[in-house]
Amino acid sequence: MGLKLYGIPVSTNTTRALVCLHEKGVDFELVPVNLFGGENRQPSFLAKNPFGLIPVLEDGDFTIFESRAITSYVAEKFKETGPDLIRHQNPKEAALVKVWIEVESQNFQPAISPIVYQSLVAPLLGNTPDQAVIDTNLEKLGKVLDVYESKLSSTKYLAGDFFSLADLHNFPYIFYFMKTPWASLVNDRPHVKAWWEDISSRSAFKKVAEGMTFGEKK
Image (cartoon, rainbow, N blue to C red; front, side, top):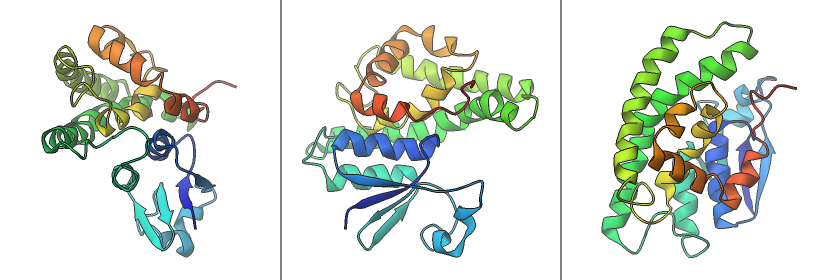
């Protein structure tokens, strides 16, 4: 049995896993989950993830959820295929990858996700964006990006001069963030901008981005 990824192409968490799978060039099947129809709340899906969230990865009789756990599993299982996203042969580099994975998860995403939600999601739900929430998180995000700018002034990528999961994990939210009026936070930081242009030009990212149509005007 091959790999099956349950999710939807517009989901930030699903796309994080999708990019990793494409970077590794492994065969997999994307199984759409009808969130609006409540498919993720059905017993059959809750058996895969009791929290009812996407994505979920099935590898034969093995099931795993949480997007960053999925990318780590894929990067480890297929470490000899495609780019080494976890630097498995160098303990120090591997540790730095883990550090910046934590930075993305604990500092970057909590700041950027409310901005993306208020700017792109809220209007689609018929709600007015909460500018106070946006402003508060723009300040937080700016501080995180200042750290990124400093780090990227000395290395090409976040964990060093090599592309890794530390960079890949940032892709989904920056992609959507660049559709908001606040893209200057990235563009005004030359090293962050160059890094973003670099990683977003990778073929795996371009392939996944084709399905990231959330927030686009029809």
